[in-house]
Length: 236
Image (cartoon, rainbow, N blue to C red; front, side, top):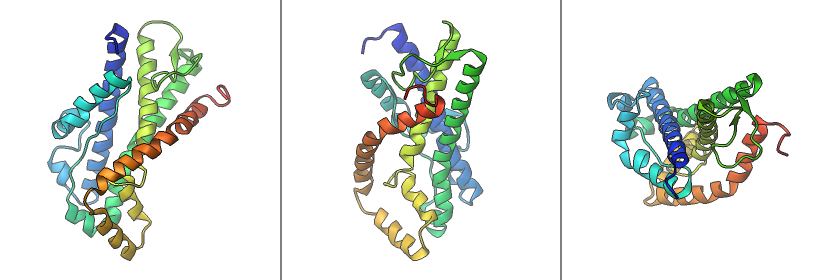
């Protein structure tokens, strides 16, 4: 990728949106765990929208990998984490399930807020529907050149990235949040067997590979759904 001014500007927009989205995701995990009886993440300083404590915990997943991914592929992915007490999770599996659900729910909330901001911008004339949608940062176009172009790109990235983060993390494969969310509907005996199964070595690696492959097949339809929700019938 050639390091033009546009590439660097979009890279900054992507990085801010990525840091904000992952920070909110992990802060939601940490806050819900604290409210449900596990203060581990709170004691570790993770109940915050300040990205610094989260970066300190996962510098590789929150800084190094996202930047490499952007300059190699034009978009960012990575990871973050919030600590929790496994003994608490074993004793209160349903609470652990709600804690796991909090992260994707926070991403869905951010996606909806960004989508609402785009719709408001369209209604008042700040944004217009793009002629063609190319990339996750192209959901909206500014009517005039200038700062609003950056705002449109930031809202586009925030909306699409959080929509994807929500759905990807809800896939029921370890170590994704969806594998713990399942406990909300499992009977107690089945849940105990299920949690024992999740402790198998290498299962997390196999889960990531499987989730990445499945989500690769789902990405097109999912992104198309997001476009249809923003612009009903316009790009059909």
